[in-house]
Length: 196
Ligand SMILES: C[C@@]1(CC(=O)O)C2=NC(=C\c3[nH]c(c(CCC(=O)O)c3CC(=O)O)Cc3[nH]c(c(CC(=O)O)c3CCC(=O)O)/C=C3\N/C(=C\2)[C@@H](CCC(=O)O)[C@]3(C)CC(=O)O)/[C@H]1CCC(=O)O
Ligand SMILES: NC(=O)c1ccc[n+]([C@@H]2O[C@H](COP(=O)([O-])OP(=O)(O)OC[C@H]3O[C@@H](n4cnc5c(N)ncnc54)[C@H](O)[C@@H]3O)[C@@H](O)[C@H]2O)c1
Image 1 (cartoon, rainbow, N blue to C red):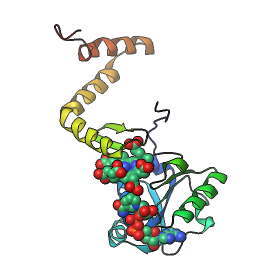
Image 2 (cartoon, rainbow, N blue to C red; image 1 turned 180 degrees about the vertical axis):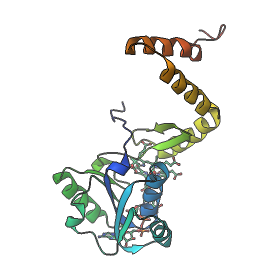
Image 3 (tube, rainbow, N blue to C red; image 1 turned 30 degrees about the horizontal axis):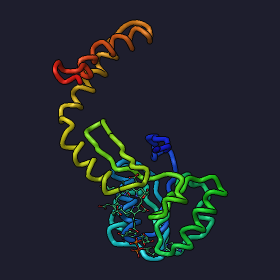
């Protein structure tokens, strides 16, 4: 059973720390910025890949610190993504983070992660996050591709129209909910002949 609780976080309201500026650090910062371009990110690492430097050069919300991690780097942070090539140090950082009540993700070490990154399907305002409970990130990636193909491109229009209808509806909350459910019931109606 997958007992992870899915949430969608406003990273622009939080402070995110990434430890490690190698390939995995680059993957993590890319995932963060693709989803949340306004995220505030501090990345600390003695070596920092040029692609990360390029991202930081054009984004004042990215702060690079060119040295090894120090515990003080966790001060004022909410989330930490740990991605150095020193497994023991990764674990130690996760422990310190936990003591300070930050949420931590440690690359390739699911056991000590407080949260996992998900595979993300994006269609305009619609976002579908996929978790396999850590069982197979490859499966998550493939399912993302399948869903990305399967979901029609006009979903954005449908959502815009429903938002317009919601804004237009007069009446109390219960009435609006009933109306919106009535209008959209066609979406989940079973097609004749397909029932088992
Ligand atoms: C969704 C995605 C988001 C992201 O990371 O951006 C993600 N991994 C992705 C890809 C991917 N990662 C790896 C491969 C190589 C093939 C393979 O090993 O399967 C591929 C596939 C590829 O790249 O083709 C290596 C890997 N990853 C983890 C381990 C450790 C382990 O499983 O024990 C190892 C083995 C390392 C080793 O060999 O030592 C662990 C985690 N990876 C997770 C997320 C979390 C669980 C998410 C879930 O529940 O599904 C979790 C638990 C922690 C976390 O990282 O948050 C992203 C999808 C990309 C997309 O959507 O395009
Ligand atoms: N690259 C991959 O595709 C991949 C795949 C699976 C697992 N991993 C694992 O992910 C981790 C990171 O891999 P990578 O490819 O990014 O390695 P990398 O060598 O490219 O980068 C590691 C980074 O960590 C930094 N670093 C080292 N010690 C540090 C410290 N004390 N504080 C701050 N930064 C420090 C280094 O300067 C470097 O920038 C490793 O544990 C690796 O085994 C990587």
